[in-house]
Image (cartoon, rainbow, N blue to C red; front, side):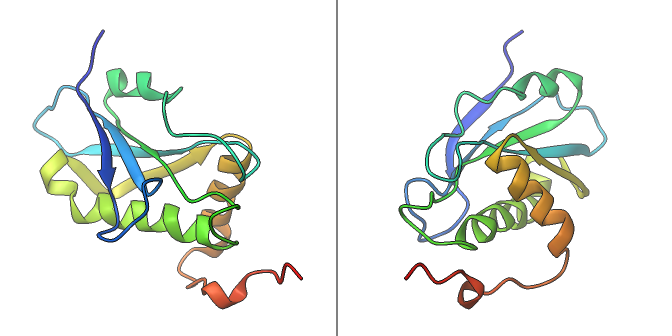
Length: 137
């Protein structure tokens, strides 16, 4: 089954080429749909949002957002977490446009993406500052 996909949507106005996401959309019923943010793996130093291994969940009624984020050679931690949280804020801001229930957005990933998803759960409403990063000297 082929589902509608929209690729390379910037989730930040002045973002880098990696700060984009792909949306995979199911047939739109009348109700708002839950969304799943997929975060790719790659040890924070490689990997890409496409192809999205979980895009098939759109056939089950989820809006899938596969997010790209800055890698460790481009930005130090916690920039990757900032990027993923920015993508969720974008999904909430554009929820009506894509039929998303802004109160039902799940986050998951593999490897480094799983680590970032876990950080979502442990940081909750805590604002992570760029000054909280590790010193690389």
